[in-house]
Length: 86
Image (cartoon, rainbow, N blue to C red):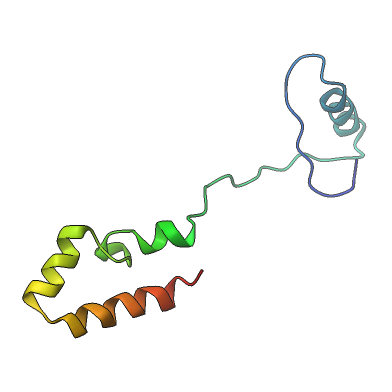
């Protein structure tokens, strides 16, 4: 089982899990922790708040248009799309 990264369910009677534990006990394999922190998608990054680098909430977007100009708003949207491409 030294073929790279593998994942087995820990349910009782799972022969693959039992075999893996036997290999670890024999010293022929090791178990390493895996970072399972979710990685945000480009959609999630784009739709984040303005403070988090996204388009901003509807309110933030309307505020950009109302207090600034439509050109500034379009520049902001283009910058977000550049930072977080599909």
